[in-house]
Length: 370
Image 1 (cartoon, rainbow, N blue to C red):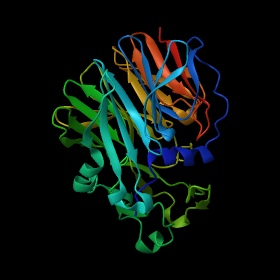
Image 2 (image 1 turned 30 degrees about the vertical axis):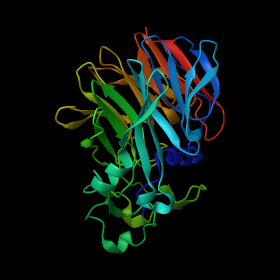
Image 3 (image 1 turned 90 degrees about the vertical axis):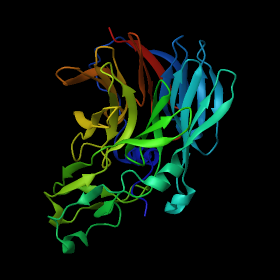
Image 4 (image 1 turned 45 degrees about the horizontal axis):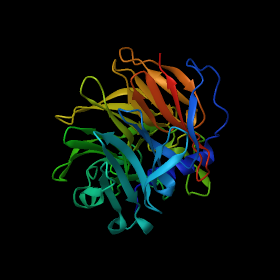
């Protein structure tokens, strides 16, 4: 059994339950400049030292460059695959591509870390799906209800999501960060951050994100299919905690040398169980992981300033929030519909916005942070 929908499917399912209405008023920054529009699900973004902008259109398998005139120049395409996690370093572009396991068959999983050099040569660096099949980093993690919920109660729980389970074989590489000869990959299927040696292609697990438990309130309805079907939870689970998976969505280096990792809560993306998205810090030398910030609705992308402030795209909150490096208090930085990815270059923040499943409503925008 697949342990969860792939991330892009989760986002699509969430869109069925979370209204994508107008962004809230109250932006504290200038109106952003639109660099490009007409994009389909632009879920990752990278900015080069020269100000060049790369963007992925994940659902249609495209990696593109935004030209100065707003036109889009294709860099790489793999139809019917998910292409994302773009990063650029010293003339080389890194990205991930994947395709899910049809019918829940782990052997059908495919996922790779790849690179494109300045002459357009594409190289496969690491087979991430093969690593998942062999190692399954979160295979020992326990999800769902604990021992406080009796077996006869669990029998009333729907088949999906499971009442109790451990991490199954599932890989969806989603974001990358590169430093020196190492790439760090946030895999939304493994619930893990991977370390990849760019020279050898060797893969290892740096950290597995811990589960995110939430108490189930009375009257909660949970989605049971991709068509919008829901069911009310049985009364016997009300008040008990369900350990949802932490689903990593972005990975960035902070000025303190630690990795910052944004995470979806692995459950409802609306506010029915609270704003449960989080940002973790991961020590890149030891893998030690700690919770840094929480109470964020659907954080799908982050950027870290030179001072340690974090900007997080709250996709279904229709805003980019700023989290203070010292107090960890958050405030709205920019109200914008459906933001997905954010990057910083100096004092300029770049973002993608206008998330819509399969529709060409996506944009690339930029604005000053000072």
